[in-house]
Image 1 (cartoon, helix red, strand yellow):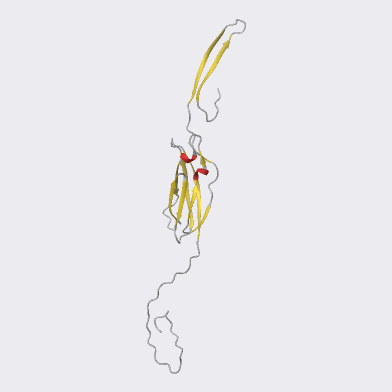
Image 2 (tube, rainbow, N blue to C red):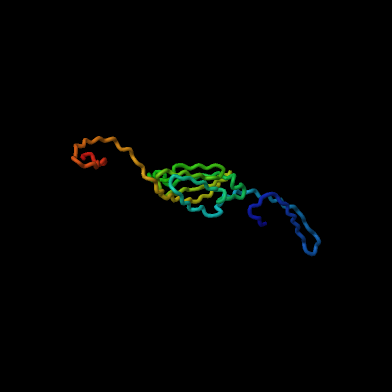
Length: 173
């Protein structure tokens, strides 16, 4: 008896045995029950490599990349785990997953590279995983002016010269 993949249920098969030349036969019904087996979720595509600017955020619909025979991809439980959260230059500030959508929040003024293990788990605990690569590009930030302290300089009378130049950057003028 062969089974069709991803099918379960009950079947009855009529079995008949004939004795050649005697006309005798025997008949019986074979009851077959095929119990469902949990198939793990599977990856249906490659997670994209993502390139973002520092300080931004993005959302990825993970349900597009995983499916399952028994459960809808929207019913799977998703997780994202950074491979090296101790890395001091990790450009990802935080992540959150809601209804199969992963949101990445990037750190201001930090750029670099990060990897995440993305896992989809079905209701019976079977799972599939893949790696998400995130590249964060630096942004050319505008310069920031720091207020200068007030400085007072005593200028002696310089004769007939109407122009006085004062260097505010050096203390000893």
